[in-house]
Image (cartoon, helix red, strand yellow):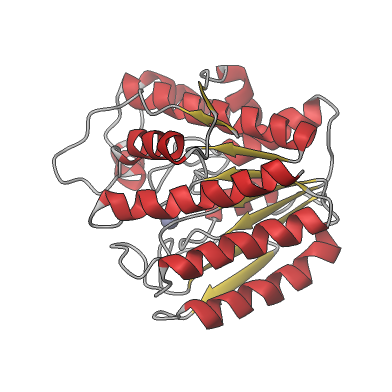
Length: 299
Ligand SMILES: [Zn+2]
């Protein structure tokens, strides 16, 4: 399988910050060692004009020039730097490429992306740009798809995606998340499923199956974006759910199989994951990649 990465573009972070900057290179090495990825490409930075087509141009100007207010900086949770911005643009580029491959070949994956807390006029929760909204805007601009679906299984609610794509009549937004997790002020998705703290594999998987039953006939999507967040894992520092690694793998299989059975092209992105030991997050992301690769071969 061909995947995209931007792991060489790093940015300055304070010591012991929770953002898992090391995860991306470890994951690339792992999927190559596993034989999951037969080709890894480095994604280009998307042009500012693309970002301004989705996000408020005044916000993009503040991001570009490092002029975010103190309040915006705090909400973002990552210190601004040129390197941070460059990396963010490359992360979006990977999702744009993976989405184009998905529409061509059925499946695509970016070893990054899923920055779902970025909305039209806000950049917060470690998310500068909304890669999924930009990728969908590109696919539509090229006349390749109209109807889309977002299946957001990160443990945090996809408020930025809901802000950008919730009102879109040709895009269905589904978010399954910890009821008591960030963000505490929500923006409504087309379907939000609140999962109680401490929920384990079985109850989570049945809620997910039910949500997909509701969603698929309504979405009638040509392309889906799957945010395979690793943070519903029981050991996650920011999540409050209790899924095992096997449960997360079953989640990936369920989502991929249901979407592919419907003939929907699927673009997979990583979203969050904040295990104490970054290797646990890498295990979970690598398992997702393996499930994508297995189905890529079968297409
Ligand atoms: Zn998250």
